[in-house]
Length: 164
Picture 1 (cartoon, rainbow, N blue to C red):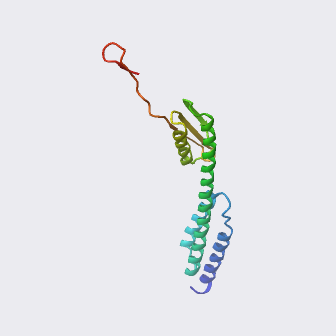
Picture 2: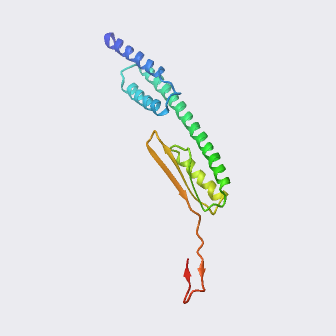
Picture 3: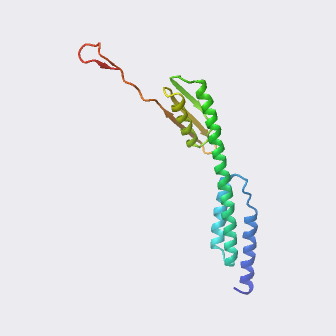
């Protein structure tokens, strides 16, 4: 490109660079991820120098990785907190027939599942139901577990016996 078209392309490139620099990876991760995706599409479709396209794409990839790493670390910390909370709850109620409790796992059902596995390990005779509320998503998640039931056969009934 030459002349006015080249100037337009350079101006567009400067605008995209400013948009990329304005991204703060420490903000709400879903908003940042959405903005990164939008900018990646804009950069791909823009008529700008190819070396600038590559540079902007690499910068956006690095930002996306930062956001994903931060989100992964937050989920891991949340799972650890839910695990500690569940363990304390179970230890206070070992041997109870039924345990129903809310946990602060938001939408992390893996954390709820891990909490239920702790019930199975620490108090194998307890049936448990854990639930969590994710207000941002407008959802409630609920998982439960029940121990295997042992069937008792009483043979003192007339005829063949009855299963209870």
